[in-house]
Amino acid sequence: MSRNRLLVKNAQQVVLIFAANYTLFYANTVGPAETIRAQYSEASFDRVIDAAGMCVLPGLVDAHTHPVWAGDRVHEFAMKLAGATYMDVHRAGGGIHFTVEHTRASAASDLLASLRSRLARMQRAGTTLVECKSGYGLELQTELKMLEVIEEARRSLPINVSSTYCGAHAVPKGKTVTEATEDILQVQLPRLKALMSAGKLRVDNIDVFCEQGVFDLDSTRSILQAGKEMGLKINFHGDELHPMNSAEMGAELGALAISHLEEVTDEGIVAMAKAKTAAVLLPTTAYILRLPQPRARDMLDAGVIVALGSDFNPNAYCCSMPIIMHLACVNMRMSMSEALAAATINAAFALGRSHTHGSLEVDKHGDLLLLDTTRWEHLIYQLGGHQEVIRYVIIKGKVVYDNDKTMGL
Ligand SMILES: N=CN[C@@H](CCC(=O)O)C(=O)O
Ligand SMILES: [Zn+2]
Image (tube, rainbow, N blue to C red; front, side, top):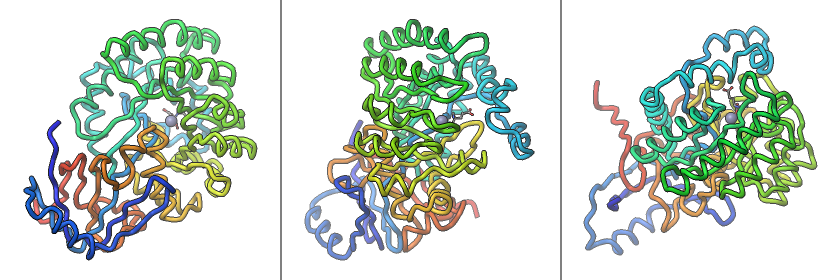
């Protein structure tokens, strides 16, 4: 891809975030502006943006989404508001099973069209790198259909994608856990391996929903281990509704990340800190399902790398990382700086991309946001206000979204 030479000048505030210590650093632009002017006096640029009065931030990273599916579940939202739990709905054949039925029946072209519009919506909310899972097929054909749709999106859209095989998202109807695990180990993973070796498919991570009534600890371990042996990074759902010792097991396997963790134990937290396994916390889950909040403060105090994700899926219909950061601050008691680090450099770490994404540093991708505000905190403070706050979204130095409010008036 050709390089885009973009000059952003005169910004009021630049939030860099350094990978080295995961802290935020603010640059006063007066000095650097002069330096840049001197250094690049001879250079020509494809585009120059006068960012006077604006803030510059790294692009946001969404570390956990399920964006490929057909058939929404708005009817279940009403059931849950009336008191049904996530597992009540799942056991009654709804939840993931409902989505599996619709996704299996859906053409790849339709799945791609809806994925494109969902990713565009995330991008308008500031996301420039997003993790995308399969997991609504639960058999070879549909899982591959989903991964190919993700691959097509990766190739054709500017947004950066990390792709995850989540064939163990639920036990398919008519199978036992043992049979489902065998199918993954003997049928699905070998086919995936062949396609990956032939360069036909790129998959980055392996995921399992480790939960009572879904995949138990032993089956989870064998699937994750097999994925690791194929070169996939371990990044899975654990300790969400019940304490399963997922965190301890993930740390032992060298997992890069574990998501949810609403029910993590103290020992699990210690193990994750020691193993440098990132915790991907998903504030929408506890909010929508009225669950206990993930223990963000205990994790931060113990030195766990805390990242954030939208968990966009038919249960939690949220595409906006600014809303996620707001929920993390209010409900999980994170500071705004902690939430921003969790939605940038730490989320990039959870995807194995912190060397290229998640901060504004030399030699990284030029993924950034320009905010129409003089203080970056407005992105979090203005609940649901990102449409007004974000002016430009830039990926690899190219403007992919320009929220020009003078147009269309
Ligand atoms: N907990 C498991 N998986 C998803 C929900 C998927 C669904 O309900 O469709 C989650 O991360 O919240
Ligand atoms: Zn999930």
